[in-house]
Image (cartoon, rainbow, N blue to C red; front, side, top):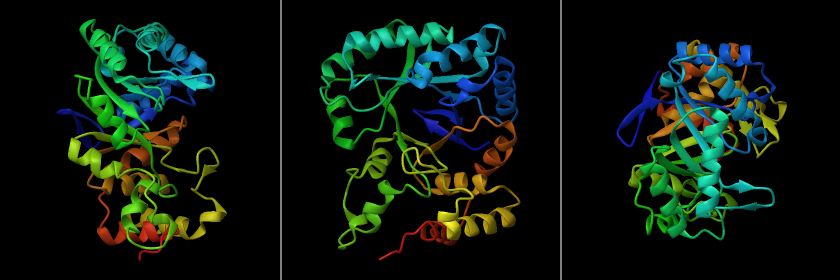
Length: 303
């Protein structure tokens, strides 16, 4: 399994997302965890809003019945989303982490991310919360999700703990963070900067980019794999899957990890049969020609 560096620590390039695990039994989740461990994937991404906490509760029950399993895993969770609003207040961050730890039945998180930007964010409160969590040993490392460079810079005016991760949506059918630079100085609408250059910023700041929804188009519309609306892209995925003796989702992962930014891919599948192809994709290095052929097949016409 390909490794990437987060703050000097080597971790797998593939992360198992937990948004969809709520429909699994404890036995099925145990099987998925073991399958991923066998493939070198020990990094699990939670959020307190996944299933309104039920996904973390399920995971915690599996940890409880498997002594020693926690020490084999890297656990990450996210907080800050409340019903109808976002909340990065100190009290809510501390309350959220206590709830996460209780549901996961663990004494610490390896990584905590602020989920979506709180428009009323006061960086002084975030800094105080992070310091308290670190001093108590409840959170070892910190990061953000869906944040722009200016929002991260604002946090950094007060936050003393390194911000090591930014989790953003990125897939072959959702390339907004790549399109702006590609279409710069053209009249094409894809040249409109919607992301403040977040990919380049993270590279310069040494932040790891975690790509979520790697097989999706839009926010929750569905997958592009096998989708008749993406025939050209699927033909190219199938051609390269045959060349590299892997699956189309493996090639979709390889496309993301071919980018020279320090990226991980968060996969949400709960089907253990799909895991080997995805893991294999992490070790495939596409050529520049192949990377651009997929980018074009997704509907991008280079200027």
